[in-house]
Length: 264
Image 1: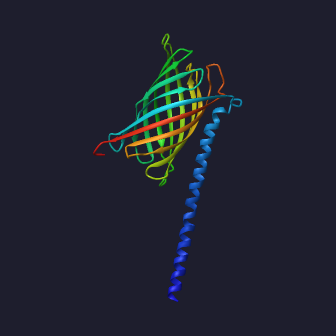
Image 2: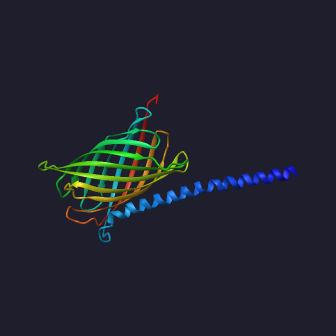
Image 3: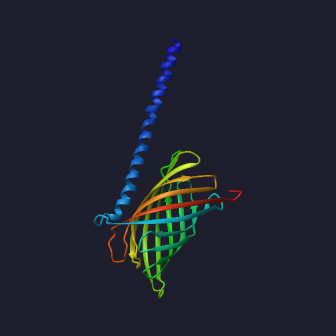
């Protein structure tokens, strides 16, 4: 009799445990659904004020991301790379963006950096851009294998035409929602959505973006190296006087290297 009562009590505790855990599990799915809808909205927003996209471009990006941890709080994570479009109206871009982040805690980070971009055009004047920026990042929500980041940053864009070095200034806000799911210690999947919002001024650039989204598959051969292939989509234009009615399909290879000091 005592044994049967004990079994019933154990069954009751087990049922109660799963019932108590159910709201937490459901809340995760609701958060994931909310984040997914935000990423889709960010991508679709790039063509919200235009007609149906009629121009399709294909781009190739190759990027290197060095990360260096000075200590537990301060991290350098700049990137550099090469980007080009595969079409008759060819252009290519070389860039370097040294950046730093300060980890206030596991949830909040402060970011700052500066970017240098040189645009080579086949039929137009080359351009050089200097882009200082500042931002704040919220690392939420986060679970065992899934983590999301919300990065809001302000950019000051200074664009030069290389024929006479005349310049224009623009202030732009960017919001990026990104997430990563770890299948195991070696393999992971990433996704993101980003929205660009000009605030004041305007630079005379030929190609302008309003929204971007992507999904990637990454591999970690070691703890210090990562290689990732990302398929990106963005809404853009193909000339300074045109509407944002072009769809860019971007094939990106990202290589990341991490250095850490012996004492963190």
